[in-house]
Image (cartoon, rainbow, N blue to C red; front, side, top):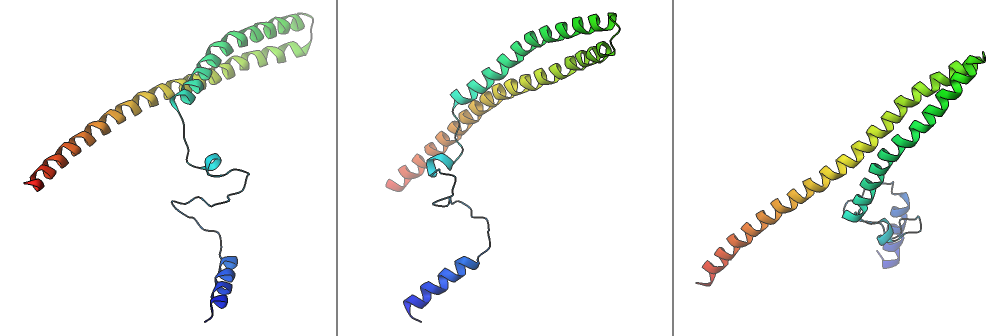
Length: 151
C-alpha cells in the first residue's frame, strides 16, 4: 500500500466516524470562537465565589425590604378598588398575598446559595489541610526510604 493510499483511507475513515466521547482531551478547535483558555478546565477563585455569595446575601436583604413596599402598595390599591366596588380589588389582593409566598421562596433560595458557598469554602479549607497533612506524612516516609537506600 502506498503512503497516499493510506492517507486517503484514514481521511475516509474520519469522515465516516460517528460522534463519540473523548476523555482527557479538548479538541483543537471546538468552535464557539474560544481556544483552550476560553473553554478549558473549569476554574473558580475564592474572589469569584465570594462575589456570588455577597450578591446572594444582598439580594436576600434588599429584596425583602423592597418587595414589602410593593406588597403594601398593592394591598392599599386593592383596598381602594374593593371599597369602590371593583372586582379587580379582590384579584389584586389575591396577587399581593401570593406575592408574599413568592418573595419568601426567592429569599430562601438566596440564603441557601449564600450558606452553601460559605459551607463549601470551609469544607475546601478542611480538605486542603487534610491533603497537606497526608502529603507531608508521605514525604516523611519517602525520606526514610531514601535515607535507607543511601546506606
